[in-house]
Length: 364
Image 1 (cartoon, rainbow, N blue to C red):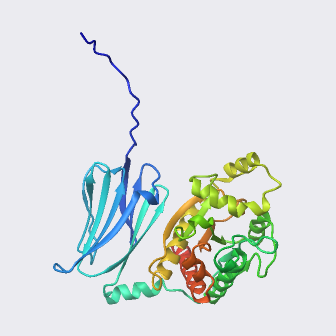
Image 2: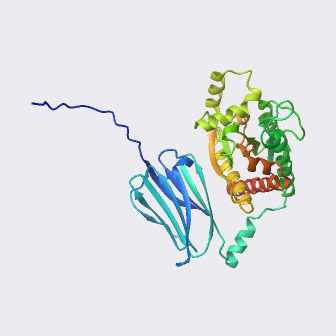
């Protein structure tokens, strides 16, 4: 006779992300979860039903759940529905009779879906739109732009031997020109090929009482992955979050970290983690949205790598909201080639300027 045995097995169940809130923020629908989400959890695709004359935009969010379905009304959009597609997938569906420009940003615990309708605006909306256009009037805002690397430190080297220090200086100069034309007071940590210690960059911004500090960089990966990884992203200061953020920070920090061991770095970053972190997060979101909005007008295949936290030494010590921008991957054949071209760099700079305008407009 066989005796029944009770055998205990360790079963790992991946916890679901619970949706805590969903709300409109101007032209964005913001979904807030109880835990951090990543780009890998978002599957975005579009459908066009020609017979029914419907444009359909679908976001599937993996390992997510909500308590009830939501019908989210929005003027001039036929239907927006948020529901549980299967036990492990939350689905957001947008349907409309005309095409809509939709982009999205994954930021920590939030998914922000940005709507830019191609529909004709009413006269009142046109007036409202005019009020947020770039203004040439004098402002009291001070901006410090920090072109990464320089001098003995070339930064990343990618397609056609393009050097990061050269590419980001060109983007920065164009951004400086645009911002000055809009009435801002702008300083550059470097305007030529010179080396500046990381700690001196934020000191430069502090000494000038800057309102924001924007450090501009370009990315690269090893040759075996060069064809597969591309896109733009923005970082704000944190000790560390994802492995990718750690790797990106390690590359940008490497030129000027020899005088501090890893324990010292992490301790200092932890100490300063909460300084201006909320405002820096908002600035990063606006810069990312600005760049995407501008480049997507001409270049439809640019990846949105999102807004992330990272342990970037160049941001430590800033007494104002500060962000590190990665304008693309020099190692990617197509993106690297574009970054070497003046029209693309000007498009990025225009997007960054628009993001800065949006940030200051929302701060009022």
